[in-house]
Each structure stands twice: as structure tokens, then as C-alpha cells.
Length: 390
Ligand SMILES: [Zn+2]
Image (cartoon, rainbow, N blue to C red; front, side):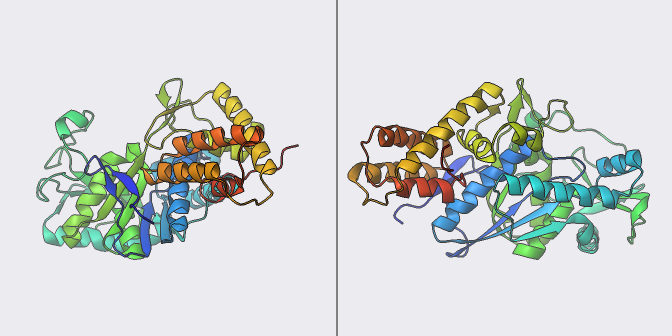
């Protein structure tokens, strides 16, 4: 490989050469879902986008160690459990199963390891105790808070707090407005030296990622909505504990919009993956997501999915016509180079697919020889299986 792959680092706001700590191995941590509901299109996007990065890195020769968590401690899980008259554990386990069903349908490669917050409570408690000892945490009433001011404030991802964060709630008893919860004594949940209760969300990912991947991660991936507070807080906790850089490359994908609004579970317009899979094949859904760059917003529309279905069928037809395994001609070589350099440039899957579309036209016109290699890249790197057209 000549030039290094470039990836956009949220921390610096720049496309940077991708250089992992170990030249052969990439340590990647992806924030997983809170398991209280089925996955929607926004989840599909996050995990498909990361899946392509992972497949691409594997194609470059890296071994990718991919850890992903399930947030199985959350008020929303408790609420659903109450409503359905079952235990929070049953709710979480059910939606973990549903998660795998959806992601397997979408051909998302499984992570090396999946972790659950509930299994990391002892480690989360240890971190909280350590932060108290170091003077970066304090107790106020029933809550243990992280003292953002004592730790030097946020500096990793959010550049201007006042401008970026408008909805920070001032809670009585907090030393600073941005201090966040490490442990809340609620009388229910988990036993701890601070009292029976539940951990805050941010510590969980620090505990799980450090335990499985070490103190410094190469890639930390998540949806853009996680930049603040989740990733900023994770970063501050980790740096306070180790004094080292926690993450080399912070990578965030943008949202799927529905009627101009972010698709999230709280704001009405959520489209479940499995509802869409009743209408469109998984390959079409993947192609639709990958036609946009991961840092662009995607507006959901049935028309664009139908258009993508037509495109997918055309690519399949061209791939079927190219099964001859002929020697690559110059034109096919040029297209392969365009495909790879698009992915090298911050994972421009949209540009890569445009090249595939153009190539498909030429193949169908009988103008290109040996194009099967490029279609096999579509299958292995973009994870889009090209089926024989009927
Ligand atoms: Zn997380």
C-alpha cells in the first residue's frame, strides 16, 4: 500500500493519516445501543458505517479487534419492564437478541467481543472509588459526581462549551454546571460502597473499553449525538485515571433524518430496521446508506430507496455479466483505483459506489473486461452481496 488511509478525527477536525499504535492491529471500540427497543435506521447507519471501515481495514491487512457494548442499565429499560410486567434483565436480553437478528440481517460483521454494562459494575465502582480518592469526584446528597472543574475542564471534542451546550441543567448540589453523575444511590439496582444504586452512563464505556482493549484505543466510533456529553465525559474520566491519551481517532457518523429531524427513539419518527426489511432487501438498505458519506446527513425517503433498488439491480446484472474471470483490462484497473482511493479518503463510500455505477453501465454496454474483481470488492469491503438477477 502506498499512501496511508485518511480518516477524519473529530478531536482535531482534520482528515489525518491513519496510524494505529500497533502496525498490524487496530483496537476499535464502538458504543452500542441501550437495549430497551428495536433498532431503527439510525442504528443501522452507525453499525453499517463502522462495518465498512472494519472490512476496509481488514482488506488492508490489519487485524481489527472490535469491542462493542450493550447499555443494559437504564431508566428506559426499567420503564419498559414495569409496563410489560417483566424484569429489566428480561427486557435487555430480549433486545440484545433482537439487535443480533437485525444486524445479522444487514450483514454487519460481529464484533470480536460484546460487553454488557451490568457485568462491569464492580469495575465501574472501582473507577468511581479511584476518582474519589484522587479528588476528581465528590458526593452530594445521593449522588457521586465527577468534578469537571477539578479535572481541568473539557478539551477533547467540544471546543466551546457555552456555545455548544445550551441545555446543561444546573442541579443543586453540583459544584460545576457540567459535573456529571458517576453513581446515583436509588435504593434499587446494585450494591456499592456508596449505597445501593446505579452507575452513570459514561463510566461504563471507560470501564469496558480499557478492560478489553487497554488504556489507549485506536478508534472510538459512535453516532454524532454521542460527542457531547458521552464521549467528552468518557475522555475526561479516562485521562484523569491514566494520564494518557484515551483515543487516537474519534470517529462519528451523522444522522438519518426523517422529515428533516433526527431519527431517534424519543422523537417520534423512528423507522425500525425490520419494517424496512419487509419491503427492501438488506443489500438495498446497505447500498442506500453507503451512497452517502458517513459524515453527511441522510434524509429518509421511499423514493430514494426505490431508486437505490434500481441501482442495486443494475450492479447485480453487470456483476453477473462479469463472472467470466477475464484478465483486468486498463479500464477495469482504473475503476479499481478510483474505488480504493475513494475509501482511502476518509471512507468515501458514496464516491466508490458512483464509480461502481459508472462501471456497471460500461460493463452492460460491453466495454470493460475483467470487472469481476471490482464487484468482488463491493461484496467484501462494502458488504453488499450481489445476487444473480432474476
Ligand atoms: Zn459509550
